[in-house]
Image (cartoon, rainbow, N blue to C red; front, side):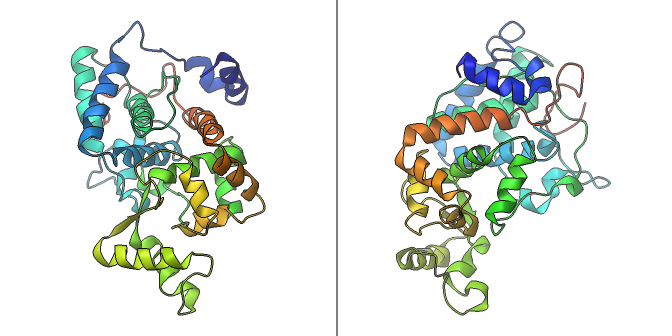
Length: 312
């Protein structure tokens, strides 16, 4: 990330960026980022869908109480955590975060936060899938609260204006919103989230007219044999701009994704991302750095957990 770009982000999120910085652990734990990178690379080699999983984990954490690893806390009988909330039922790769944390604790005890582990691991998985390589500021601390009642994330049928408002409420703009939704280029969705679109759309007894008939047929076959389907039917494991090209051809799997291509607020941005992969990736980096600074804890706030699943 260029210094000039970071200046822009600093003025958008002045408090967060005052204490987040690239290379935060260069003195206290110089091997921190390489430990994260190596373990993510191993996991990606075994299962390349880890990119989609970590992106989902990072998004779901940052948009509830900020990027503070509150999503990683296990529930107790008396207190259900964010992890127990319905929208987080499909979040996975908690074991990977545990493995990374264990190695970091062995190398540098009580130094690297779980919030930074999620942020770095997500960045590294995007690179492995063919996405942009970028530096991201670190120095987040871990939250002390995790309640399932706090989880209010947008669903796949939300309107475009509703989705954009969700992002702008966190200090981002429409370019950021569309770029982050572009992470669906490596995403997977449960068939139950969109089965009405290829069977009985809004009670009509017919498929969604905004869906390409060839995709209707493909999804029927896929979901008859599997519980989920790729959200980018062209290059599902590759981080690129094919997602935007697909939705312009009425091949969006989720209703929100398809609406991005036709809504007046976003269709021009979709076209620009579809026509310029490099531009999409640059905007995605900007959006990820912004998102990674949402409501973060720094300095002496929060804590550095020794176990990402439990408060100290």
